[in-house]
Each structure stands twice: as structure tokens, then as C-alpha cells.
Length: 472
Image 1 (cartoon, rainbow, N blue to C red):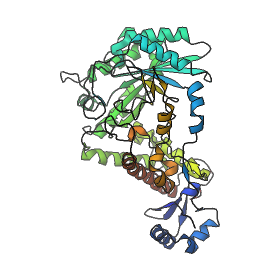
Image 2 (image 1 turned 180 degrees about the horizontal axis):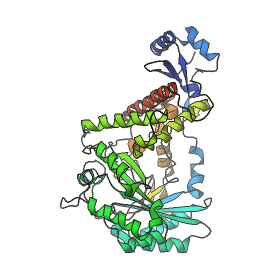
Image 3 (image 1 turned 120 degrees about the horizontal axis):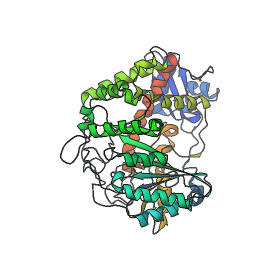
Image 4 (image 1 turned 30 degrees about the vertical axis):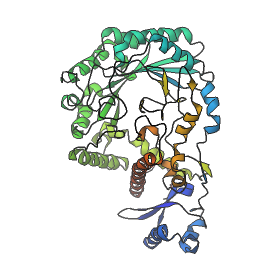
């Protein structure tokens, strides 16, 4: 009998098996659970009556995954030719702040602040390149990124004007990510008139924000940023729906203070707040979070889980934690579908490089997004001079190939979300190696196992998305 791929899950009350073959979870007795655990070592599947019992119910099918390949691989050339979704221009690598955790701060291997800026000629070439490959799209999107993009506000205005002259028969949307310190009435009016989506960086209360997001002279930027956010509300009250807040949780932050700030400050009552941890891959040395961070996070997670099962009211849960509900809903629906794994598949994580987002740096080089390293050819997917590097795009799309044998037999395959931004690569390295992927795999499996465990416990306490029962 071929290998059967599963994960035993034990809660305080019950015993479960996550079955990869049909991507679902089912409950077992304690004795059965112990046999499943033993089979992970002995591999005597064909001798097990327990295996036969559940196979008769359509579960625990023999592993038929024999090829790791992204399903979009063969169509990638067509997508690149006519289906590009969005263009993000890195208009500058300069910044007026020196946030200690920034990707350009020197903490990371991949890049540092420099004076590089995009010319209007490069921007026009990028816009033309993008628009010529959006034939099957009714809507086109243009984003502006830095460094701090508002240092190049004149270039942004020229780009918007050029886009409006160039786009025919399509809806053009614009967006910008900014630290918020350089916003003025003129700029706010421009963004409002051109229907920009704004993402403004704000890390919570004054104490937490100013501990990380500083000017070169060491002064914090909180007062200026919040004043400018208030300026937006006064100038254009209806513009709030187009403004989001990006909050980075650094190892130096007191998480409780960050959560409390956004929960209690009425200014952010209707604002979309995106919370993300400091990027941990590519660091020159490991940085530990404060001990209180993990304690507060577990406490907030507990409240959130209690809310999901109806034990406490939504008002008791942090606004930032409520966003996690989508994760549990998606996992619940996935487990209900009982999807049979095909023989040729790939884990999630990789976007369609250049298609879902084409990130163009100040020199005209192409990358899958703004989060990957720009100092290694491993992530470069082309340039304005040479066009798309289809072979490297396929390599990035198929990073599961680095661990193909491991992926074939991995219980976490259907829910893995590793992409190249999570891989550490030596500076200048032409491609990622297996060890880079293996390191990311451990973190991914830990997160997925935790989510499956929590889903089992939630179900025991009555969590449902609808009246239909999951197989648990």
C-alpha cells in the first residue's frame, strides 16, 4: 500500500485525524488515535484494520500526489501577455524617516537606503509596458511606493496625468503607501480628486509609534502623522473609506498598548486597519519579541476564539483580532469541501509573478512585489530593457520544486502558503536552494497545525458557519 498522509490532532477532550487525501478532519477513539500515531513510524498501513475501516468511508486514500507543479505554469506566457492586474512603481528608494525595522534600515541582508529615484521616462516606459499587457482586463491599477513616495510627488502627478491620457476603455485606479509625514492640503486634494486609495503607516499610540518610526534626528513622527490623518478627515470627510492604516508590530512594542489605542481612539472607528508583524526573514541577526508580546497575543486570541463560539460579545475583542475571523472561515469551508488531492498539484503561497502585481524598481527592474529582496537575481522577473524572464517566473511560481519529495508526502500541502518573500537567500544568489525552503516549511507546518487544532476545539464548542455539519 502506498503511503497515507495524515496528522493526528489531540485536544483536551477528543482525538482527531487530519486526512490530506480529502482535506478534512474526522474524530477517532483514543485507541484508534494511538494506532494512527504508531503507524506514522511503522508504515504498516495494509495491516491496519483501523485504516481499512475509514477507507471504507471514503477517507485515508492512498497518496497519489506524484508531481509538484503549479497549475498555472503552462498558461503563464498567455497571462503575462494580456492579463496583468496591477503595476506598482517604486518612485524612490529615499525616505525622510529612519524606522529601525524598515527593510532598508540595515537590519536585513537585502537592501539599504540610497538616493535612487525613478525618472519620468522610466515611469512612462513601465506604464506603457503594463498597459500593453492588460488586453483582457477592464480595470487597471497603478500603485506608488518607496522609500517614501511623497518625496516624488511631482513625478506621481505626471504619472497620473500620463495614465489618464493613455488609458482607453478601462477604469483606472490609483493607490499609494506613505508614512504620512509629508501630506499637505494640496496632496490630499489631489489624491481625493483622483480617487486614490491611501495606506498610511501608524504603529499605535505615540509611545509605540515613536519608538520605531523616527526622523534621522531621532524625533518621533506620531504627532505629524496623526495631525495629517485628522487633516484628511476635515478636508474630505467622505474620503475615510479610501484610507487604510498599516500597523507593524515590532519586537519593541507593547502589543497591549497598540491594540488598546486602535480600540479606543474614535478617529479610527471606521478605518480599515491592517496589522502585520515585523518581517523576520532576511535579518542579519535574530531579534526576540518582548515576553509580554506572546502573553498578550495568546490572551487576545483566547478572547477572539470565545467570541467565535458565542461566549463573549464582539465588543470584548480587539478590532485588529477580528480580522483573523477570515482565516477560520476559509479553513472551515475548505474542510467541508472534502477536496481530493490531484496527482499533480502545488502548495499555495506563490502569486502569479508579474501578473497579480508587477513591481518596478527605480531602475526599471521587475519583481513579483515590494516585499521580496531586490538585491538578488533570484527574485528578479525581468526588466524594461529585456522584458519578462519567463523561466525565472516559472521557478518562483514553482518553489515547491525545491522540496518536491517532501511536499509530495507533507500533510500540510493543501494549506501551505509559502512564497519567495519568506525565503532567506544569500545576497546576490542566482536562485533559492532547498535549505532556504526547508527553513520556511517548519514555520508553515507549525502555523497550520495550530489552526487545525483550534478549529477542532472550536467545533467541539459549537462553532458553525451555517446549519450544515462538517465531517468532524
